[in-house]
Image 1 (cartoon, rainbow, N blue to C red):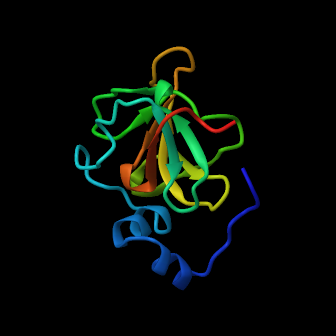
Image 2 (image 1 turned 180 degrees about the horizontal axis):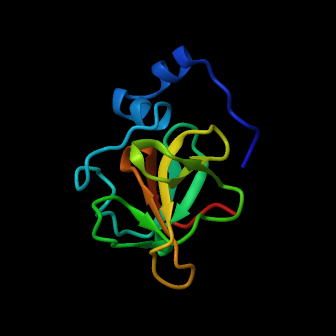
Length: 135
């Protein structure tokens, strides 16, 4: 995964688009059914848009009907971190990139087998690359 990436707020603003900054650094959410990757079905790997950390495989992506890319699990343990999120009048589990701390989305326990989990991730927080996952 590499060393932890720590940048100043100004460095993040220069590195990211306005939409990426809002989601990755300010825990925003893109509107449902608007992201570029929610209908991505090619074989490949989804990387953190903030730091390039490989996070999810296309083989673990499924159509949840929510309008955001959904995955049953991260690429491997330790790629994402989770923390309790009690904002917006509800309790959820927030998902962050383990390398840069960038907000990806949330994980819920209403997903399909084999994990029963649904990692509901913002398209803008990801970059997709066609091909197999890195080793």
